[in-house]
Amino acid sequence: MNARTVAIVIGEGFPALPLACVTEPLRVANRESARPLFDWRVLSVDGEAVRASNGRSVGVDGSLDDARASS
Image (cartoon, rainbow, N blue to C red; front, side, top):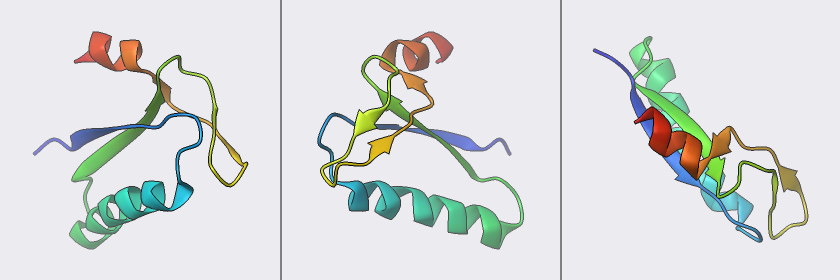
């Protein structure tokens, strides 16, 4: 079984806590199953880092166009 890829799109001023609330269950599922069930990519519209509402800059894995091209 191949891992499912989840695309998470964030935008300028996004709240940081929900990002962790989405990715942590995926990470735990992978750990508990002892195999990769999920893979995830954090994306922004242009592929550039995005500033969260707490002021921290968050790097991303690519842009929306990158994700569209690879699907």
